[in-house]
Length: 358
Image 1 (cartoon, rainbow, N blue to C red):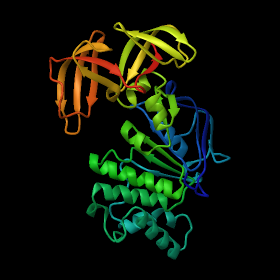
Image 2 (image 1 turned 120 degrees about the vertical axis):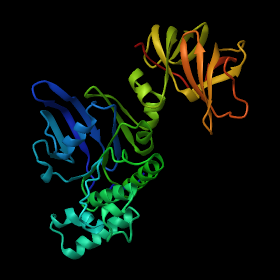
Image 3 (image 1 turned 180 degrees about the horizontal axis):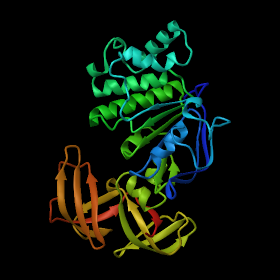
Image 4 (image 1 turned 180 degrees about the vertical axis):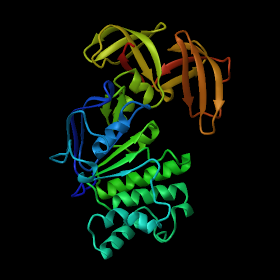
């Protein structure tokens, strides 16, 4: 566990609602706690309320109902200028006519720091994001990834109680995105910062977060660690949003203690009941947790390979089973299955998860 920065503060939402106009509910009755020194990601599709939630922490939007606390301080009615938070925007929002050094120093000048300390902090900030020696350049002379780092440095030097990121990587290409997200996570852990991070990219969320808040239709669908959400989604929406999932309708035949027995196209399988009772349910299975063997006489569900795609480090398969189409992946690129081939599908030991029927 990394040390928590002395300035890092928790963030709490207590029954927070945001309504625009008369009846557009952007955020509905949210209760949320972000522990000091952790990175929590708000994840969800467009229009789910995640950016509005972030902007309410910043004071750029005011809550219609409920309370927002940063540390022990109620900031619900405070303007952005009176909250000790910094925000890194999707567009970077750098001043094009100012040098990198002037951009990073900008906020410090208004925070009452002496000239020497402003310079010292700005240089330290550039060092943190790997931009030593870039202080004299203009933003236009930098790559997208470097501009993003300048925006991060500008926010970091203010040593805010909470650092906010709004879709910070969406303007970068895939390779740079991976690199910059790793740098952001490394800085957050090294400095023990409280970070609230908004993205719609589930892989990004899984990679950087201590905890993920999945949002849907202005409310919270599920909160948990990346592993919790991937391994034990609460419902079909979370299962499908956090990594792909095959959703299969099944029948729970019996429940004994914590274990359910299910039937699926004549195949019986036992797994954790997760509080469900006999009757219809759904099985969420990740593509990597489906096990395939050649032929149609094994212990499992008979299916046929409809499509086989080689993508370099793995094979991707579309399978047609009695109950519908499944998507599976396999690391075996040496002896792949062919379209039209009969296979038997079974499940990895920790593979499928029961969720309520749709």
